[in-house]
Length: 174
Image 1: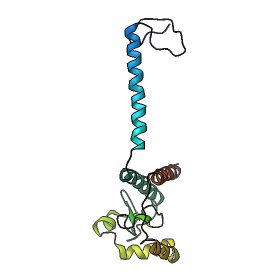
Image 2: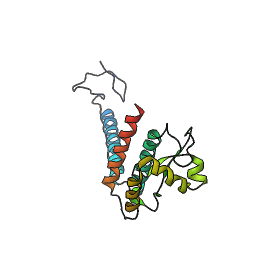
Image 3: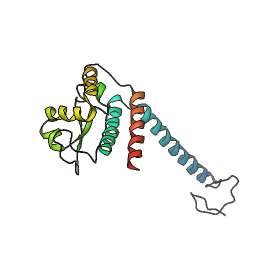
Image 4: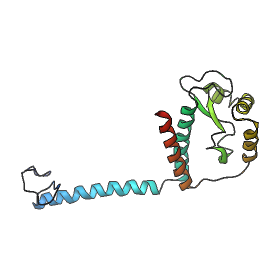
């Protein structure tokens, strides 16, 4: 016979998976426990529904950058061509701050050493040479054409981007 979760006395359950006996104080504890559980579920649901575009963008950027780092871990820095070892960045050719449409474009983002990306502010002249070699001049011209298009992502698009790059990163880790 199971013991009541509240009073710890043995009782005969009337329903499958019953954890509380039917004493008034135990029923009250059971209801309180159920309310807390339901509130946690409701809070989680509300939290996802009320996420801002800004917070979703940060989350999407994190998953996207993780994917880029996994994709490029065995390549050289796009700018200085040194072997990428240890910590390195997912460097954008067109910055994500000024060119939102290319923020999540895989042709626009490549593995870049911390020195080139942060200290040399992207080392863009060398980046342009490296990106032309890596993706080809046709794709580079398409990036230039797209770069000045204005784009705002919706919550649904950002959630979709998060799921896509979560899956892609998990696939590369296997």
